[in-house]
Length: 313
Image (tube, rainbow, N blue to C red; front, side, top):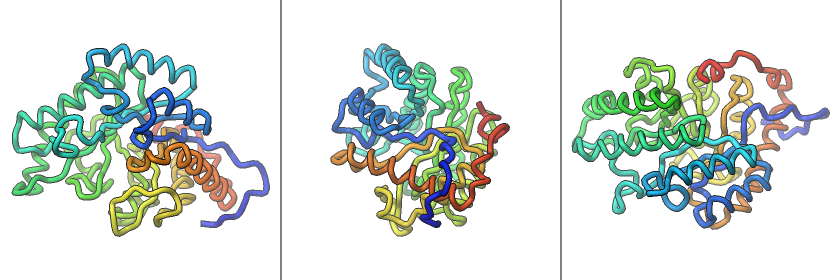
């Protein structure tokens, strides 16, 4: 993508630039929000669990109410992320999952996501993002898919009851690994209106056959949430912008082209040691990439009105 600077004013970004709290684990949540507001972010991706908001804490509901007031004061939008590493199992990261052969353990994941839905309802969050899980050893892909079909609808039903949308995130190495996998699962569970897709732009570098543009075009009718980070094609490792192979201008430009109006939040869960610096540099990189894309294709910024995302609101 060109680094050309537009001759005229840069059109406003039509989606909300955000930052994930899993990249601010050395800051209390209120302080993290202060930093993000200072850097100009209009949204936050809240990862439930340690250290910011434990959904199972005795005072979780009052915390949610206070947080909603704080977000209102800051004018920030919010999505709920459920990728906390050790909340459900202190010994195994991201366990248990939908794919666990033990029904009781899989139910722990289902109940966590149902609780996340309740938190999201209290926050008036735009969606709850979730993943499928890694296929357990000794389990075939067919058996894993059947477990998803049996367990995901329970969360979908709970979300429908609470007026909350869900966004399934494909993850490298998981059973639902690509946008095509996520769309297949959505179809197989009956294409519920409240079930959409999260796309992590970095993941597209690693696993998407059509790259970031192909993945976003495929996901467009059901795209509810976007995570933004750099990545190299050789490893699922979230990197600051400029350290990987993502064409950030192309990615943000494609979001503008498809009429995306949701949250696009930076996802750097292993970089809390430099959170304020990365928040600043990430905002600079994203606004610069948007300006560069606008210079090369200014007509695409006029996309408004009836977008696929508005149909899901």
